[in-house]
Image 1 (cartoon, rainbow, N blue to C red):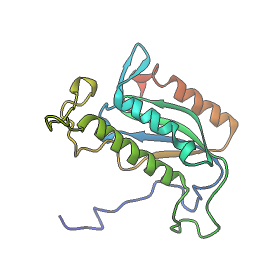
Image 2: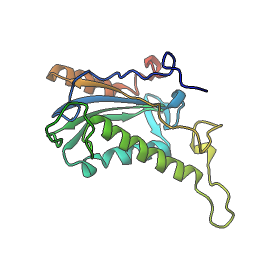
Image 3: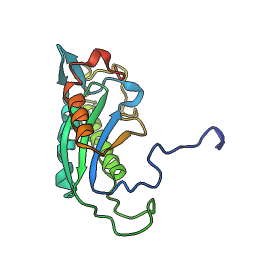
Image 4: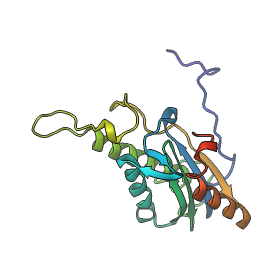
Amino acid sequence: MNYNPNKHHRRSIRLKGYDYSKKGLYFITLCCQDRIHHFGEIKKGKMRMNRAGEIVKEEWEKTPLIRDNTALHEFIIMPNHFHAIIEIKFSKNKEGNVGEFKSPSHTIGAIIRGFKGATTKKIKEYYFSKNSRTGESQFAPKQFAPKQFAPTDKIWQRNYYEHIIRSEKSYHNISRYIKNNPANWNKDKFH
């Protein structure tokens, strides 16, 4: 298929001109590709993670160890998405033009890219590792919701949602939403 700019363009959903490496609190939502339930299930209003969900939790909790300018607040792993509040405690980016490429980047986008990459790699390693004796996949379908999941399938959607938290009231509302997400699963738009 040839590139057609009228069909194949990407529009940024980020706030134009905003420095996403700036000190502040950010509410993040990541969704699984096609909203497939990769991470477990909700039973009686509680999230029951499978191994993929545990990997997501472990990798998220490593974020402040990898990036010393971050702190984690509320987060929840749901069957097919992930909500979190992350804080950038101080900016590590040098002065320059907003949006200008800097390596290494210390933006919310860079944090999310690293997290999504690490979780995808670890989940696929776990479910598709080869048995050293037989050379066959050790994939365990009973532990993983999608029955047709293949090593080439994507775990995460291409993009993510973010919201810049600008007030204490907003922080408390979002925090409460995250905590209550499993209990409200039947009303959840990602359900």
